[in-house]
Length: 453
Image (cartoon, rainbow, N blue to C red):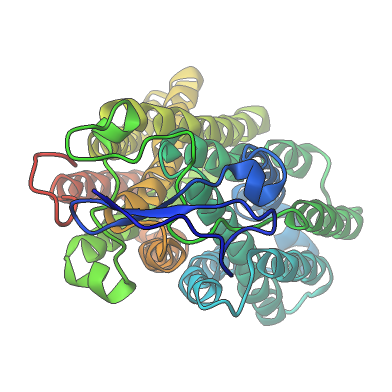
């Protein structure tokens, strides 16, 4: 472990706080000496709650969309396939913007604050498009493409923000912020099921767009990234065998990997494939659970409640497994979550065959837990393996797997349902999830020899 002299040059915070750079045995640099208050003027806890609030605001676009599909179809004259493809295109662009947005941020071209500002405006336009465009292609462009880009800018900025500010214990905090993206939709799920019809859909959708704009703009005003290589002043820099708590189970990356270097390790492509498979199963459940419940013969309350249960547990589960991964280790927790997701798909089939409402809600609970909890685990695992300096880009690459899964989870999923029925489609989803869990077992932290995941 070597230390550079204390400095307060051009890269120092505006407060003039001094820092020094320490290099560990792997060659990784840690910038120490500055507190979060030196840099921000307040506690870094704000960089948890502000992203969390913004994530709750944009969650309506994905997690409540399925509850609005029937009214949208009647209002605009769309088919069920049309609405599935609108959501699939949204997922494609929401995930696809993560990498270019991360690259622009790390090049200093796009600040976190500006990314949030742009995202809020695009989200507003997307709901206006969903409200006022009868032509399905214009709706796909307005909500699917533009709305997906807007939500993706907000999502990726929020997730990377919390990871940068909490490098020593990011699991629980990343999970907490990520959870807002699911349970934030809960009020809108019930609004769309009980207070949304062809008489008021313009007003409801327009107001939702304005709500997202205001909330995200207010949160964005306070966003700021820490300096590169920053490490909390009150936390000891980990050395060989010195980590405790979360750092013992999830040691920091041995160095800062650029995207090209991360790809060459083989671990980033493996994460990407796992995300493609697991997110596809999750999106399938989001897209079809309400319709499956109605086909079985369950009433609208059970259908809405099953989606509400999925959204709440999806979100709360993200926070729980983030905390759990700090205790168990990131990889074992990830494998556990993906297995639960797979078993839940088979459980939904069983509940449908038995016509059991309580059993259906129970497996909706499990599906919601597994279908959301893997996102913060990959978000935390990426900087664990490849470092924080290029995390916006590296996680953007990993998360981009969702753009592929959006196609077969939503749009292609509707084709499988049409060909094989709901039971066949859910069985396929369960098998895909189990295969993803097997792939996740192969993950290893690059450059570290000891048996740590």
